Length: 235
Image (cartoon, rainbow, N blue to C red; front, side, top):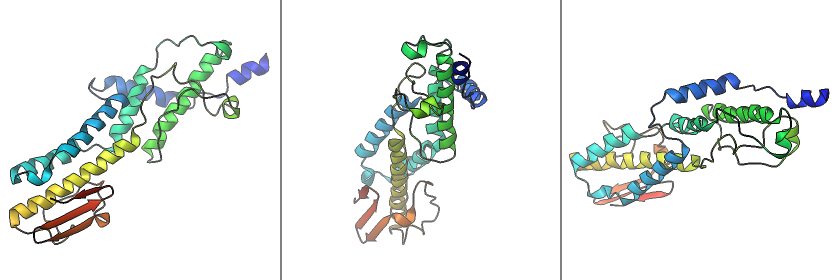
């Protein structure tokens, strides 16, 4: 029994303090702060807006307003982190009763510790700029679980969240591209000339998600073609 007691108490919750800090931080944020499911819906809505907006038909004042709006509303990496972290508020104050092997003495507490380690390690990785994916669903027992490297139960502790990280980054890049287009079209409207190059646009500062050197830019007479990644603009 002694060996079982030792095993079920291993490992400790390495991130208990960080987990509790995140929990308290989220409780203090405005109720309007989105979780991942809500952010996923906002991503879809913003994508539709980009698809439906005919930027080439906008007047200079409208372009200027749009440029300001795109700059002020651009998401940062922290927005995704907070949305994922927001899911922590679903963590139950009273632990659920688990069945099967998890009903053995100490097993629920062990799963809680492993879950906190998994969840908080994810936050640490994404804050460090490393690849990030939300926690997977319930997994099968394996050697890593036996050794206490990760838990296998997730659904009793958090509601399922969508894996929208790539879509989040994609929308940020597209917003930076549309922001660039407003700068090009505004210069044309104000001076009657296309910018000589994307590096020579007085008064225009691109959003940080844009790599100007990777953008294809061709402007001659009435012809304009701008393309980057999956997007091409020809007014």
